[in-house]
Image (cartoon, rainbow, N blue to C red; front, side, top):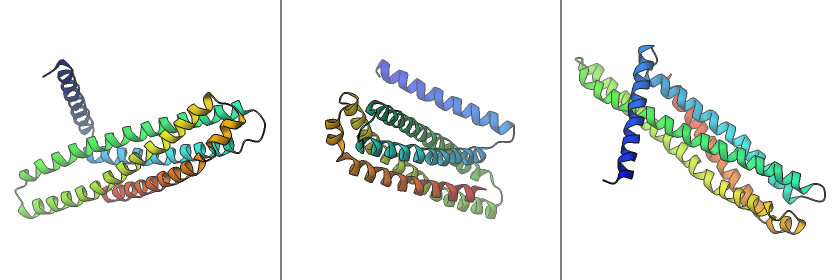
Amino acid sequence: MTAKRCLLLLLCLGLLACESTYYNAMEKVGIHKRDILVDRVEDARDSQQDAQEEFRDALSQFRSVVSFDGGDLEKLYDRLNASYEDSAAAADDIRERIDAVEGVAEALFEEWEEELSLYSNARLRAESASKLRETQSRYRRLRDSLRRSEKSLDPVLATLRDNVLYLKHNLNASAISAIKGELTVIDRDVTALIARMDEAISESEGFIAQLR
């Protein structure tokens, strides 16, 4: 095994150990993995809602640029660039929130599965096992929806980044004319992204309601 792979493995093991320590500490104060999962799904939902606003603003700023008809083009560019950076930051937050949801979900389901063997009452064990499968099935729908919305981030960010970079070095009317055709693409991609986020938000709320 190479040194790089060893370092990566140690890092992963360290992260897992940190998560396990965190869950154990929280459980001692009465906060269980189920509670943490609900909190993290809520955070993921909120990050989707925040990102929707950031991408709507980026679309609005791009429309302002391509509709430029005199004035301070540099100020328009600065607002577009700031909006793009805010959108990119919101996308990073979404990715982190989704990873956090997956981490605690996996830990919860593993613990739940292991504890089924502790039951002496067969009826209660069967009911708990059924509830576990139901929760896992609903969770998979949530996870897939979250990941679909995450995947939709990249085309929007890539197109915005390309146009921001192009304008950065070409702040003139001809540059505006050159990127006008991009508005249709950006509008389409942002609309699709927001729709995917709406689906993820709906799945998040349904999953939270099931766990509570």
